[in-house]
Each structure stands twice: as structure tokens, then as C-alpha cells.
Length: 169
Image (cartoon, rainbow, N blue to C red; front, side):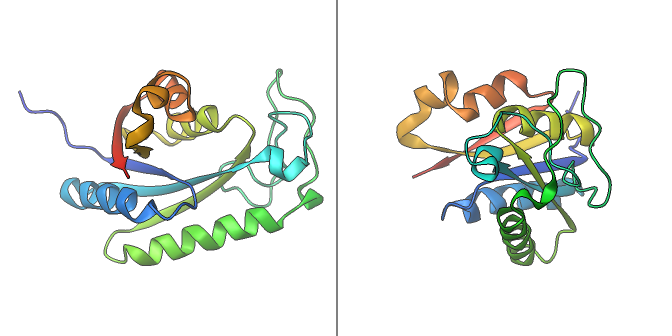
């Protein structure tokens, strides 16, 4: 029995120069399956908070809902005002807009989230959005580390869907 086609592909991106290879692979798969494509970028919240507490949600930055406060779970610390530093968030939005322009033939949604636990933010975003395939890049020289202790390794352990790792130089 053939596998069901993917309906929602998400690609987790950083701003490294290799993003083209990862996006090309994800958009090709989205085209082949007629799937939705979500571009995800996680801003490391430690950069926003300047060494502040981990996993503190920012007002207005929960999964693309720009004008509502994120509802913290019982384990989350109190939210930090969005005005803390919106430059990195705006830069991330511009980056995803440029990436979306790279794949004009595939409808895309750009999502920026802030978290100090990047792997968890990727997995949780995939879970919330009903993603059935996540595409990530992984550098060749770090495959063992990627599968054991890096952010990609943590994504592998938390991922609620299939995962495609694109080998990068």
C-alpha cells in the first residue's frame, strides 16, 4: 500500500547561506504532493532577552498571531513585553519574506517564533499546525552530533511527524 501524500510540509530555517538547498528540497516536495508549505524561523529568545530567563513567551509573537498575548502554560514564566527588542523579530520576518520570494510558485506561510529552546519550538510549531513532514538542514561534518546532541538531534526526538534532513556542506 503506497504511503499517503504529505499535505503540510514545514521547513525550519536559520539565516545561514545554505537555506537555499533546504528550501529547494521542501518546496519541491510541496509541489509534488500539492502540499501547503510553511517556512519557520525560530529567533533565539536568549538573544532577545540578553541572557534572560529561558522559554519566556513574548507578547504578540505566539505562532504568528501578531496582536494577541500568548497564553502561557502553567509551566511557562510570565510573558516579557514584545517591546523588549522587536528588531530581531522584524529581521526574521524580512528573511522569511525573501525566502518566500525564492519559491513564487508554491503558496507559503511564514512563521516566526521566539524561544530559547529551538528544538522544542520547532516540534511544537509542527504539532500545532498539523505538519506531516518537517524539512531541516544538517551539516555533513556534524552528523553524529546532529543525531545525538545538537538542536537537530533534539528535534528528531520531539518531532510528531516525518523528518527529512537535507545534507549541507
